[in-house]
Length: 286
Image 1 (tube, rainbow, N blue to C red):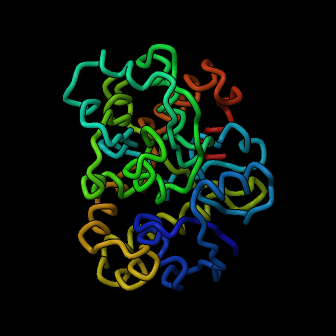
Image 2 (image 1 turned 90 degrees about the vertical axis):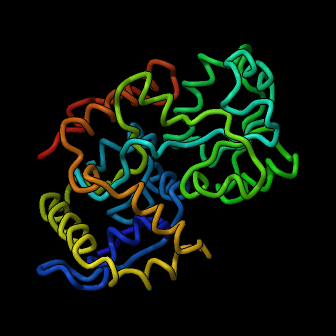
């Protein structure tokens, strides 16, 4: 069975047991490791594996053909994207009026089909007079060096950048996760696990949830596998990444998770950032 997910520690932690034949009754798995901006386009273009990790922001383009599974993804609190700059004058310690300095500036983002981008656009529309200037899409691991080196004015960062941006002498303008949580009361929907609708979806969800439960019960077993794909990430950063992005919502989105997803996609549709979805297509079980 073919699946695509990122090499990030949270994904390799969740899927380690499944792809290493440790889940009873599950088939063999053929894994493609790809960052989420790639899988987003695969899903939208209908060219990827039958099961993929994508951004929740890409769901409106794919829900007719792919179902959202209730487990395995990334949704939570305190785990949102950050907007960074090399200019400490724009740090989050200053007043919101300082944000006018971002008006017309060049901002790097990791994808235009990501939750991070949706949150940034929603936040910027309410907080940056006149709006930002050019949006530059680049791989997420290149954004902080580009901000540091003055190639762009500010950057939207995700993943382990939460723990490492000070290494680049950058300052935080805003934590978009905190902004979203304060504004709406909802957790942040980040990465979704989707599967073709003609598959055995309950079985898939059961296997993925069993893989997560195995990972929690046997955390030492997955460490080598995680490290192999962690892109030279320091062990303490790897563990912080897992601790932050793998949580109770990874096991089951639940009512709170589905409400958060609906709220994000409804606000984004109202802002003409994504197509409006049929809410029935989000429901589980199918």
